[in-house]
Image (cartoon, rainbow, N blue to C red; front, side, top):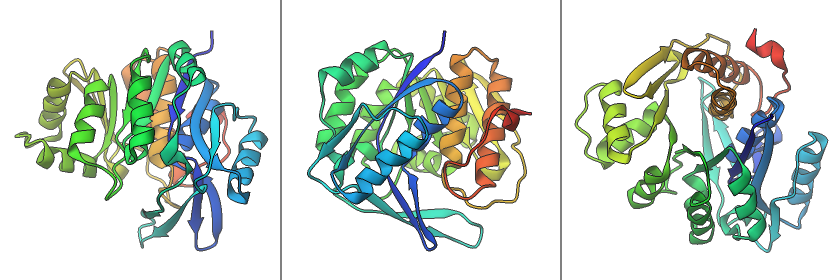
Length: 288
């Protein structure tokens, strides 16, 4: 039976110097889960404006359900993307936008209740409305996956603690781990020590740490797994971490061993980094 996943968060346009592309980490994760054959629902919000209608059209073209995308009075989100000489992306995120005001409803609760996993991130919690919706939905989730996704200045350690306390699986990158070490006064000197302290502090079953071109680590039941990653010519890094997380989730839910999960996630993350934009087309050949 196909596994089902619900993601909640940002739907937006990434605005590059050469034009705009559909994006948002939460939508990216949902689209990659969908590409990999999982039944995926995405909770977000848009405005009844051209940007919102264009995003709905984009999802429809990708045969993706828009059933849980709400419409409200705030504008559809856009993000200015700047790439440095290494093609690393930085983001200027406008506020307030439609996904800042996601409303709790019975249909959201029943969808999360029925799913195998629920994926959430800290950025969507910058506004009290969406934050409270996420905290309410977490009570109904079977497996809670936290993509910490820190974007300055849209987080506080108090909110992060709330979200970490709920997580069964945490995905964090090397820069976010440095922040957590400082903000939580962790004493570890190595990545492994820090991951174990985080796991113990918040009772997190699995922590995945991405370290850019150096690959990724996973801590599960006190055992550390490592993959050195795949070397590619980077087009841009937009969406690479999102595709890594989606592949990690789909592979985990489909019962692969952890070494294989990590290899599959690194393959897809590297492929997406080698392409322009967050949502390039691919099929099963990407895993070969």
